[in-house]
Length: 487
Ligand SMILES: Cc1cc2nc3c(=O)[nH]c(=O)nc-3n(C[C@H](O)[C@H](O)[C@H](O)COP(=O)(O)OP(=O)(O)OC[C@H]3O[C@@H](n4cnc5c(N)ncnc54)[C@H](O)[C@@H]3O)c2cc1C
View 1 (cartoon, rainbow, N blue to C red):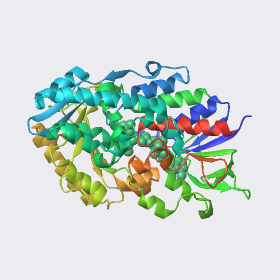
View 2: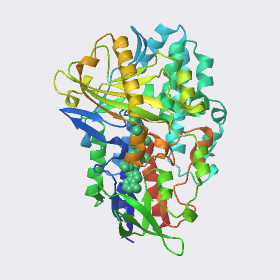
View 3: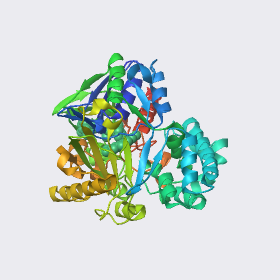
View 4: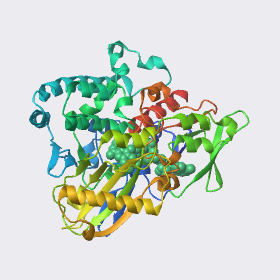
């Protein structure tokens, strides 16, 4: 039976769910409060420069390919995808950096150069990471998180130890070089938690990093949004932008009956929200909410971020597409995010120069630069703080890459906690959802199906499987399957 399904928000999880639900012959409408689609993957275009405002790392290309295949397409039908070489560099000081190349052989050589004997250990580490990646994709992440039994398979039982130890412990046991230790712990940051709080099983992210590589869609990450919107529209999905949802209406029997969009009622058979889970529950009367404020307050959230989008009037040297500045203590910064939330005195930061590998991202002879400082959610966000960190980080960037930059800035835009709240209704201004700690994994995450309201569903980075673009694609598929099964 054809049902009318309304979706709140147009992030990757909503786009994914919209495609699957429309493929099942439902009437699907997406309501997005902002004027552009794609959620946090918005693009900023200014004076000939193009900036991806949110995600910039294209990892796990197999997950994207599998999504497109479900709709009879291939990635190459939608955009040109290049593997970056190096995938990224990690800067530890002036003239002190390690570049991660585009093959395991190159990476083994770099490790061996840094620490004698480490390439043999890395080969072992990668073998386990690869095995866990296969298990994760085949047995775990495509599960809806309904029951702990989903995690129990003959394969996962063998891996129980990987859920009892953590990434930091494993890395420290095998590798002595502080630089290699930092590189191997970096992928965990995508999961939103400290390496010491992330189960060893998540070393599958190291396979995603070294084994599967770092890619870039020509013209930027927004091409993914355009590709998915194109598929959705071809299946009949209707998109409504500047359409803020202020209420989810529930009838007397406890069934979702529709939403209020810009003050007007839109009736629906099923309501699905890909907006921030906490925010979505505030659209319900308190008696219909499944989780209390205390529940959300206790959860470990992924960091927020202070971001700068900068147009430079010259080409920048000594940088690649992705650059991690790990020249200060990793643990001290992590403590300021997770243990004692505060603005970090001396932050680690990430710098993205997409125009170094994709000339379409900046005018000729110029460079697009995007800087990201991870910070705790819910921190005070003022113009003075932004100005302080802009100066601090640019000074460090100049010193570490040995060149003058500040006088070459044509313009800069910033984005921080207040914008995450204002633009995305994000809980405490988190940048990318709820962390994947042991106690916030799989069936322990907020549920895809409301426990209180019939025909109300959720998807996105606060649900299963977790933060990141590939998980958002999977989350949309999972919730569509649940809705389909029910109908
Ligand atoms: C700065 C940054 C860098 C990142 N880097 C990477 C990366 O490199 N690689 C990677 O894989 N992932 C990265 N991520 C994470 C990734 O972008 C997210 O996990 C993913 O995009 C989340 O998708 P989503 O569908 O869960 O939700 P969102 O993208 O948050 O979409 C939710 C949508 O709902 C809308 N909405 C909210 N309330 C309402 C309402 N009341 N009415 C209507 N609409 C509403 C919002 O406007 C938003 O468009 C990054 C995120 C950020 C912010």
